Image (cartoon, rainbow, N blue to C red):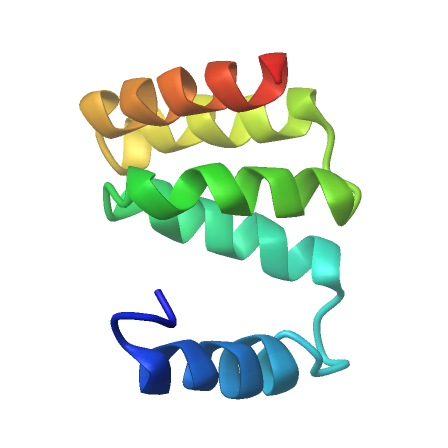
Length: 94
């Protein structure tokens, strides 16, 4: 993204990941859980792949992440949950 929108890349690195994600009020695991849920609920599967990998790094298991998708099927919509599961299947087999 940096070659096309360098300012957005800098804000992402400095503000989002450098400040917001570093705040102590929520653990990285909790931030990943919230972020994955928000991406699924909003149908943002493009960013979901990277955040599923980050969620695993931050201590969430594949079972827990699958449970988020099952739970969100009833709150965010069946199609969004199915789309998320299809992305997760690809991420988890890598």
